[in-house]
Image (cartoon, rainbow, N blue to C red):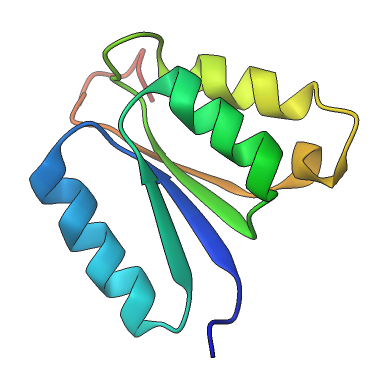
Length: 93
């Protein structure tokens, strides 16, 4: 039985599958969204235990998702975020 839901917001299908597999192996149910808008909507609906979010998404960036989640009047506003990025520059960090 899953320990809860983890939302993965990632537009790269290979990365999303890799993350999903590892998270499922840890005992969680995984929901994957490929866009920031879809991720924000899913976060508000599902209220997951954690959100793993790419920064570089096709419609908005991951920070947009985090701001949207943090503004919600529900328990999702305190959901832990883990950001993923291929950026290696100091400003992005």
